[in-house]
Length: 279
Image 1 (cartoon, one colour):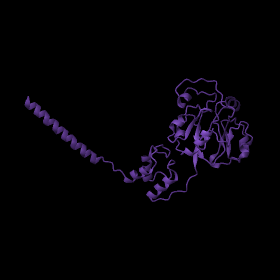
Image 2 (cartoon, rainbow, N blue to C red; image 1 turned 30 degrees about the horizontal axis):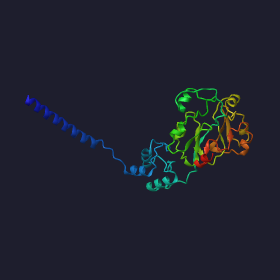
Image 3 (tube, helix red, strand yellow; image 1 turned 30 degrees about the vertical axis):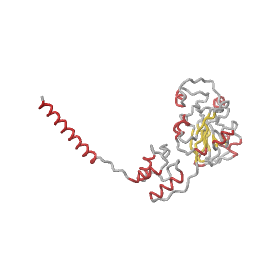
Image 4 (cartoon, one colour; image 1 turned 90 degrees about the horizontal axis):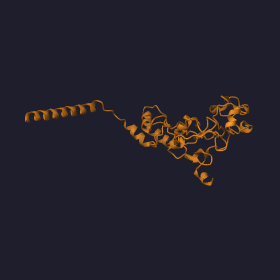
């Protein structure tokens, strides 16, 4: 009996020793060398891990920078300061500072403007509401459960209880695209702040249907298109579309819009939080 116990103990010890040797050997064979530059660059970045650069997180963006697969000014959160530091570290020249951009919510579906004969009793998320058919007569509009606000890590989207709509706080927006990805209706886009005129509607319904659902819906009448330089706008699926690559909208473009769907008003946005307190 004693001999059996002794043999079992020795066998177990030998097996443990062999496994330990194999583990040490494997760790050396499969060891992944980490480029120290990636670590240093990651520390230079804001650490938001928002994905606005096109990579899952800051570490992956740093790796892409080292591999020369990402632009030095690819971090919208860090802005020009971070771009300059990254460029200096990599021995490159930082490009000219990009024009400031922000998120825009292209929907005029405020309480009292967008009509609703529907009752929704599901989960308080935009995704759930849209899957259930929405809560407004316009099936393209904002359903107002603030998935965009929940996705923003910078406090750049707040609630407007009066309108039932999310509001962009311009000074806090870093154009990280998190809200763009979160909106199931695809109502949010990032554009330069210098582009003042926009079509605040995404309805693809025919004019009479769209107008019946929302007082400020685009009805696809083409008035704005005809009043804009050729190629600056078009009508697609009963909706006026802005050509942002050849941006040429003027006051004349919006002057005769019968529903004021296209405007230079600050829709669903405030410059800073002081405007909210004053409101």
